[in-house]
Length: 190
Ligand code: AMP
Image 1: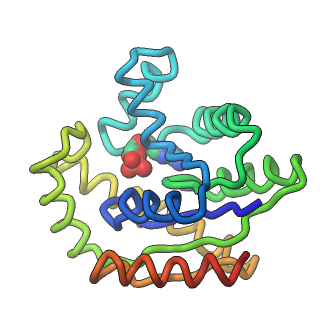
Image 2: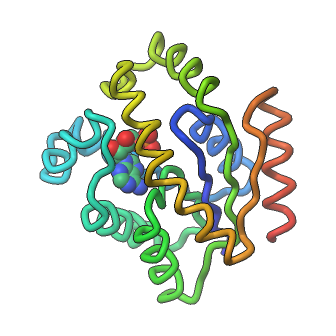
């Protein structure tokens, strides 16, 4: 099984690049942000529970996020592999993911971390705001999300570095060039 974590701050291009990775490697896409947004749109109990957090750019508590991811994985038993997009965002989530995969005799193959500086991120999210209808693309919420990333989520990087799985890819530049750097990392892990 090929299991990839695509890691990066909000606005780093995770959505764009994961679409290309899925098309090339036939992986199942698990984006916790997308699943939360779907649940909010459909007014489910989970949606009601997480709305406040997501719309304010705050991380949803680990217990809720991990349970949700576990059922999403259980719903794709026949998957050839997964691309985790926006998960894990805390060390607790990273540990839970390792345990869940180990329970089915699997593991994370590699971690691609898109590297984009804070100034560029803010510029990109400003642009995205013009075309997206995400409630959390408003300026103060964006700043909060970037802040959550640099205060909490970056700690996941050393977790994977210790496992020898972390690969940083420059996330600034041409989309196809960035994709080539990502596929080089994935192909080396296959
Ligand atoms: P994203 O689309 O990945 O930027 O996620 C949108 C929002 O969903 C985030 O700002 C968080 O509120 C929530 N979220 C998504 N993934 C996670 C996660 N792994 N842990 C906690 N909260 C998350």
